[in-house]
Image (cartoon, rainbow, N blue to C red):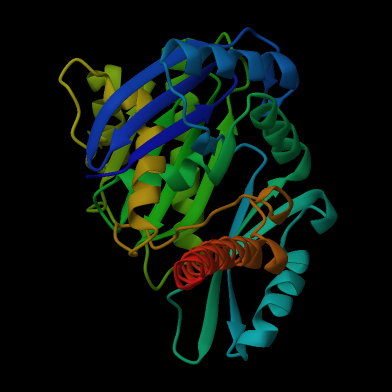
Length: 358
């Protein structure tokens, strides 16, 4: 029987909860957040966000405490770096040293995760992801106050890359306050951009102008820096979020930029009355849980960005030995009790025989 997986996505405007079982979406729910609780992907009021999470779990009658969590990619950084071939014992130190050099934010303000990815022969290529400490600390404070135990954390752009069914594609996701552009080349997110809209009151046409401009700029930037393997007009663009509801709009993007544009679709099975486009980040989390164990899926990046200080600590040697020791003690006591009872029985029989002889 497939294991149930509970996923939670938190952004500035809402909480989105989803329960999957294998490749099936079983349950889902969304609750809005009052303005000011989360601002620019940073939780500003941990207690009230925790209360909203508790309420959502109570309404859905979920008793599980282990969850997978997704957050916005705003403020988060990602890079792919190439290093010379190094012994495994030296690789971690070399990666962190290079991260300090290439990331524009001091490393003591970041939680950095990394994973080896396919690279040129004789070299080691690594994908880096960095989350600001203030973002992660506020998130885990709220989750712990809600009584939850997250065992996987990822950012929205990387989760969207897991939903697309192509190893090479461009993904554009539009939400109320921000949008993401992900350039996926051979399963590697080579370029990730999360951009906040200049104003929360922009209309759909104004948002479209911003998106088209940034998308054109992103493709141009990538092609200038990757002349050996540029993005051609045959590479598809997949849209999700608000753009899904406006076919004429994303068709206009296709006509103007010259790339085939189509809505993103879910690889998980779901009831026809579910608007899956609202839950693509949750779906990406569920796929992360499924695919990270066996390396499947179009994206080769399967990072768990939970900082080490928030990971569940493995039991100490004393605790691991405590259970076998207790079981052994119980077995020894049971054996001794049986021996004592046997001795008492033998003594009673001998006393009875002596009385008969007397």
